[in-house]
Image (tube, rainbow, N blue to C red; front, side, top):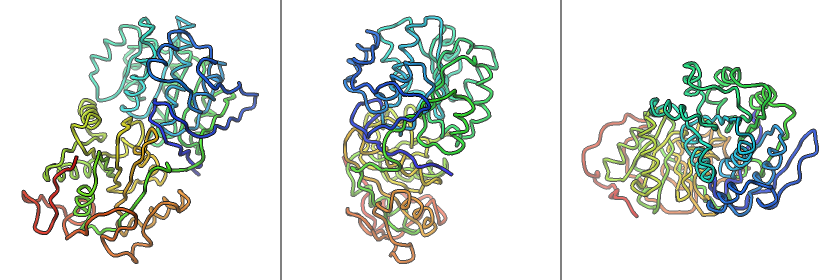
Length: 447
């Protein structure tokens, strides 16, 4: 049974802000919590890098975890994406490698996007130590470039399990000198079926090492993973369980398959700012993005079927403002560091109720405000009940579907009543003719 998930997602990783109070449990007395980076006795190169990155005060996960990691403890860190956990393991990792020139470190992550973001944090941290190199090994990226990066003998490897195994099987790198292993988003790696690959990778690692596991949840599978690979770990938990960001105005609309797309257009017209739309499948992502593109929206998309170059271009274009709308599968629910997302729309509800919190946590980051909207079909009743129960029934949502008129909105905000249409999620979708149908509002994007 899945344990309750932490939700104090009020900052952008790695941007610092105030999160929630930490809780530490261990069989041994933990190291005292640091109140400032200056108390951690970090090398000058790292102190300067933190200043350049505008890291002035540690977040709770950083203040609690960094001293423990520096004390060579194995650690289980339970913290939501956006609480500063990347720096919580990168700072002590770089510190350790500066002290031990012959040692290396390995960071395993479930998604390419998360790997790229961790690599960027590392790049900034090691600017003052040019002899300390890192390499990012992810699927969908140029294999030749990765081989060339490995020839430079990087001491930090950030990788997804599949691509790392490709290189290990070909003998392109050795993990025998790994002093620190980080399993980031451990629950997500298990959800994505990486358990077997993790077992294979661990056979290449020395038994004498420090291992850190960071996870948003600690269900039975994740705890079993920790028991298998960590030794007497200290456990750090940050935040209150399953608490959604207070500055997110959550809303929902009860719709039907026939008017789902019209409702989406109405909502896009009623909103300003950037919008992240979540769908359930790669095929649906492509269809929704094409539909919106046909109506003149500046839209891009990401899912597991696109190449890494395409995904990077989509994310960078969305981040820079080239595209106002990003349509994505749950690959964007974690590890997406874009602080200016104004709205999150659930075109489809997630398969797992807990992923709803990760999705809406893409908005209202770094202390900003944000809005989320869920489009609910009658068959979503059971899942919406589980989501509402998970959040303590605090989400603004409709009563049971049979008591709500199609298109009725059940939260603050405006949005016109749709006039019929086609949906990719229910009725048969057909390619529309150019130009908006009669009676449908013009779907030109707003700034």
